[in-house]
Length: 319
Image 1: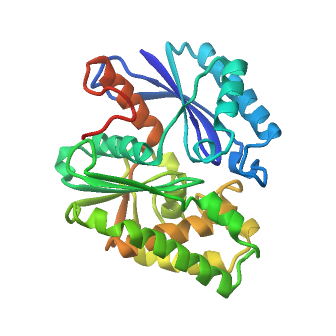
Image 2: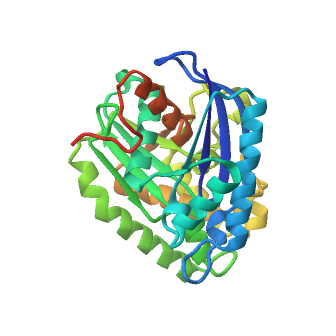
């Protein structure tokens, strides 16, 4: 079966097309189509998504539908995360997208986003990895999850996305005082949920997902994307701490000269690095193992599970 999933995030809107021939099969990538929409930047002072932002989103989702049809997709799913769920006019935007494209976007709550991403990491690394701890950072929020099973024992979401925090920084690069304030806020938010994660027990494997973490790992010396998804990649806290200091002294325009850092990702990289560094430090992690699968793959896995009754919905979890 050829499946497609549209992921509407705070930074990008991404269509992933995969072949999954039966439940339990390895989803094989067929095609990827995305745009950097930065939907969170199309917010009005009242917290609504602007008319222009809604129009751009509707237009690109319609484009994704055309691409999916051309690729022979049998089942197309659409999901939205932080930017849509935090907006004051969520219902109106969803209705406009549906009217324009025919796609009914499901809005994932933060803990559901963490759970689905955790599932993707668990399936990638398998049972032999033992107890997992997941760190996933997007444009609008940070997701953390931990557990031994496919459904984590703890899954939390905090408003510490790389894009969200970058918009709050005034100077480029930020001054020492501004960076100190950012660090204080980030560490306070993470510290508030750290005890819940600690009660699960010490992880046997700490996993990082998302484009931001992949970019940070590459900038710290991990293998390039061209070497494929099966090459082991890690991000060490000591290396990340050095990178944060380097990024803090560089204007955003120069960060794209670093390995694995695109011009689109460069402005948000410092804020993302501060969040990941604080997460690793407060959670007692020396190293993150980078997982190539994340939310989109998790959504596809959940859909395949639903065909056999293993899962009732993407928002379902243990009582």
